[in-house]
Length: 288
Image (tube, rainbow, N blue to C red; front, side, top):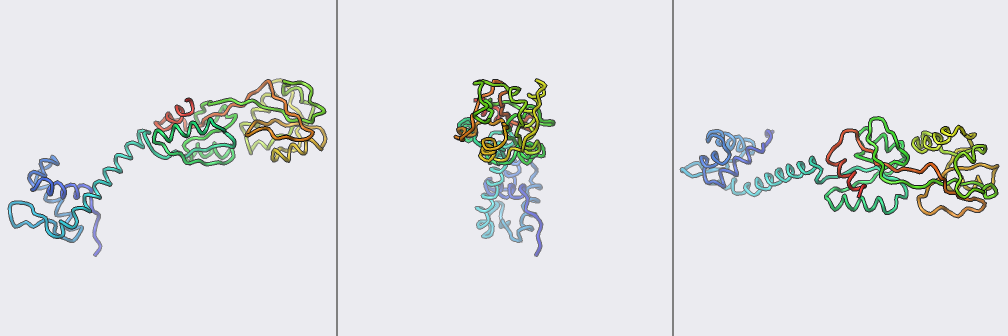
């Protein structure tokens, strides 16, 4: 037989009658009239297909079916109440799961922030993808937040700087003179950058800094992997690239790294534009 749905208030009425020993006192506890309690219990009996109370006397006595179903009803009601409590804590930002876009080689700074979030009741599910995909995922709600390097502006999103790192030029050792060069010092040589669509924020940071001094260099072959690009710079026609530390800069025969005086690389926390309890917790964790 196809039955309808058992409702929370039906179970609540059933347990109130059991706990209070009668329909009248159950009505007082639930702040409704006695007839409403009786109706809820009758509806529950119809939905379950059993009689829950023996109605032969003035007291409400559980039937055999009612005694068997009583612990199940208590468990269901406890689960619903627990679900409501957890939902309230999630809505307030007190606990929950954060879908977080991360990046390569963040070091101890990320791990300390994640530990703070875990200690406060927020579990973090990490997602690693390209910067462009991270930004898109925060924008369409697939991620709650993400770390993105060089993201100074992201339309429709909030951008909160959390730390900075130096940038380095990598160039043939024979051309490495100045200990603290500027980007403009190499503007006559082809520059190897990854295509803009792979990492728009970083690409715009470097090309924007070069345009600011009116020294945009010719485009060299695209940056592929760090190891392959360094090998090409060391063995091919003179060219250069700009890198940042993920781990230690790798030893590369024929290559010299020079720390740039300007610009620096800012890593930011990118969040939905509308503030929320979770976003405030994330900002606090990375600011600590």
